[in-house]
Image (cartoon, rainbow, N blue to C red; front, side):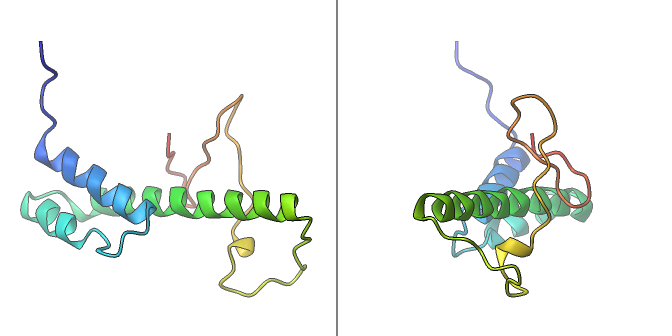
Length: 109
């Protein structure tokens, strides 16, 4: 028995989010057009974009911190305004979870 196919809007949302999180050069603009053409509300698309960016930024911050730790690099107190070091401190929600919420409170888990 085969699994049921995902709705085209779900595929487009997943593709948009993964493209953003992966920093794909096409930036998900094709998926954005498809989603709007399907009548998906901009608020829902914005939520997906927010979560994808949060995951991307959190991954970069954790990778940078791990590199700095292994390299024995201490980050200066005053980081440039566009630095990932200026992101809010990561909040672990509970237990062994590796998930934190976006700035607007959206869960990415």
